[in-house]
Image (cartoon, rainbow, N blue to C red; front, side):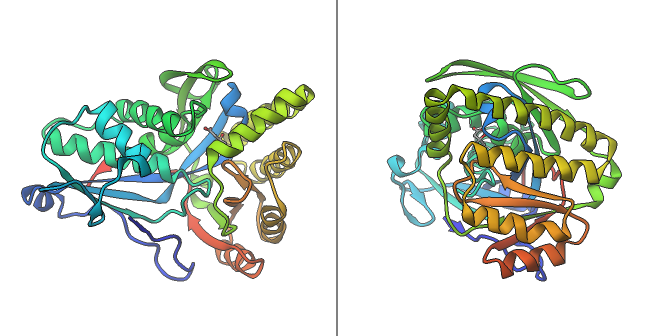
Amino acid sequence: MTWSGSTPFNQPPLSLEPNTHGPTAQRWGVASAFAPGKCILFGEHAVVYGHPAVAVAIDQGVRASITESLEWKLEGMPFDPSRHPHITHIIQSVFHYDGPPLTLDVQSGLFSAAGMGSSAALSNAVGAALHSHLNADEPLDSVKLAKLAHSAEATAQKGRASPTDTATSALGGCVVISGEHVEGTRHVFDTSLVTPEGRREWSINVVDLSPRVREAWLVMGYTGVGSPTGRMVAKVAKLLSESPERSEDMEDISRITRAGLTALSAGNLEALGMAMDACHERLQRLRVSNPLLDRLVVAARPHSMGAKLTGAGGGGCMVALTEDPQRVAEAIEVAGGRPLVSRLGAKGVRVV
Ligand code: MEV
């Protein structure tokens, strides 16, 4: 796989946008799809326990291409299913594929294990490319894909995964995931999962972003340290079982998320930023931040409306909301991080 990471801010981002010559690619027997990464604005970790989370799709993502061949290959190398649980789950357990061997090519503009939803984008892109390969005439069903990709994510994360990453990458825009319907949002679908802590149910909803929010920027800052989501989710589960009073922080995150959502709908960037700052503090209490993340958050804040870690924490990325992305990207770089700049609410998975 080509894990390309970010590009310097003053260069154009790695272009993984739809290839306008898609039909030509189809003619040559190549099925390709692009799925965006995601950035959680509020509610990471709490969403695993049924509290709401708000995430937006970002401009960068994963592109997967599939062709039939004589042997199974990934990026020109023999494909080892045990090393790629998401892809294996999609091909075997979801599509029950038993056709000729396939060659898969994957290009990513996301850092992996960094809170950008790279594995969800990978599952969605592979699922959409395989759908296009097998049923070229049927339109892509992004809800079905979100559910399939969630099952792949749950399998790879030992049964503890919310549908946040997969739904945001599949649907695009701004997605609200919650144990129950959240007022002011449009319901899209429901999904559930049996986790080691019991059965969880989520309602997946979308909200329209106001023009003011669409004009703002997110600058994500990668610490350079990958952090597998499954490990961080298990760490929080252990903390909660040893110190049940920490569930207060989950309640706080839930309250902050609702306030952030109100600010988001009203296009109130200042309130949105304040809610992001408050959310970071609660995530620190849940011990999922670390000195590297805190350093990037502090560096970004003077030029931002707000900043927090995003995703599972323990490394990975922070995110700042700003109208001055160049300044924030520079501040993150000076503090030792790798910046990646995006608008909020990119389009969801598509065949390209
Ligand atoms: C990971 O991007 C977000 C977490 O809330 C885990 C999950 O939702 O599955 C930490």
